[in-house]
Length: 154
Image (cartoon, rainbow, N blue to C red):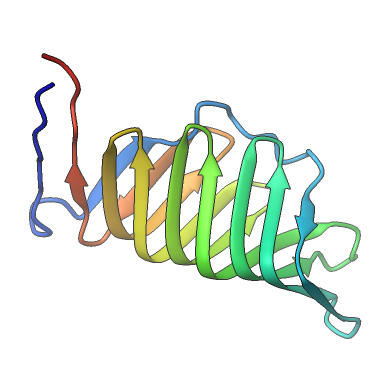
């Protein structure tokens, strides 16, 4: 097997568009959240999940130490979720990790920031921010983008 590394300097690449997830997400599916602790704030209509938080929606799985759920104005559904501390997003077969993420449920969009690392098979892409559209199966990495490609072959 031939292994090679390809690196692009920050001046050459400030943005990279990539595929993300083999299965397009359906934002209308139920969202399942598990954690060690739950704090509910009746005044602002938010819920804070703490400790080994796992969020599952269809094939998408997000894990973090803290997830804040913000409900819409009518409190009839989730508007968005903010995840912090050891954030990992898996949309098979791809996975991304970062310091912070915000998931807007209706649009199926996730923004990850802070030391973002996207793993696609043996290849990786890192950057300051990743904007993923789970319904389209695409993502854009921005800011200090570095790519390491590990092509297979003889």
